[in-house]
Length: 197
Image (cartoon, rainbow, N blue to C red):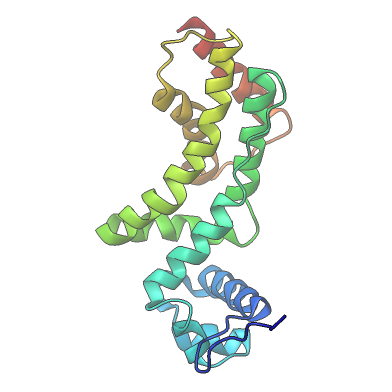
């Protein structure tokens, strides 16, 4: 039996190098923001040459987008606790942890601002962060319909906006932390609204 070898000249992307670069991108974004982040600074922080970055992503914007998307989508949950309330609570808890993450909480406002200025970044964020996260969370409401907990004609897009919108407004727009019991109160409000629809 012969062992297949990587063709000569082919780039082999080492996972530990990719991880170091990803962490460096997040650290740089948290420290200097989108506008001041440079490929040089990321490479230096990661301990690699710039060519290692360009082997993975063709541009700074694509590197930033890919790293933030991976970080963000990995933190969306599909808990399947057996009840609408349990699922919504777990989803909102994960949402709070995502947007209050020590590094990401410093990146998130800049991401929103950059998306407002840059239509390509806005579209990229929708396609690689927003829609994948919503697809994961949509299952919460689909199961609730199947269990008979909410009406079959529930507006799923509106349902997805409800809890996330409340949490986003408080934590990001108002800048008010979520005290103990906050997620439970939001959960109860969303469940009541959905069951009355």
